[in-house]
Length: 150
Image 1 (cartoon, rainbow, N blue to C red):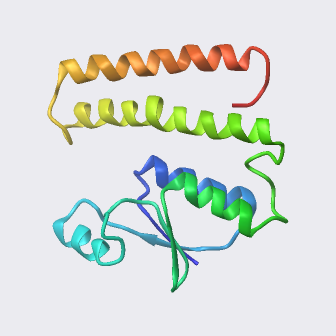
Image 2: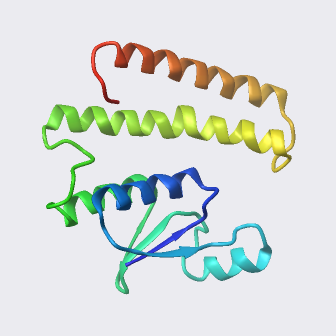
C-alpha cells in the first residue's frame, strides 16, 4: 500500500496521522512538487498532481485526505475509529472535517504562501481568508463549549 505525500502538505499530514493512529503499515512515497521534473514524474502516477494519493493496490486508488481516511475506516475495522459509528456523530465529524479544510486550512495555506512568496501578495484575498479563519475559530469555540471533540 503506497501513500504519495509531501511533508509540507497539511493534507498529506492529515492522511499520515490517520495511518499512524490506526497502526496501519504503508509505504510512504515522497513527491517533489517543487521542481518541474518532480511534478511531471508524479503526474504520471496521479494526473491531478495533488497529494496525498493512496494506492492500496495496483488496481485501486484513493485521492484526497478525507477519502483516504474513510477508506481506512471501512477496510480496517479492527483499528481505532476516527469517525464514530453513530450516524449523527459521524455526520458532525464529517462536517467539521470539511469546515476545517475549506474555512481554516485552505485560508491559512493561502496566507502562508503569500507570506513566503509562493503566491503574490493580495491584500483583498488575505482579508477574505482572515475573515474565514476568525469565523472558524468562533465556530469551534461554540462547538467545544459543550463537548471535547470536533
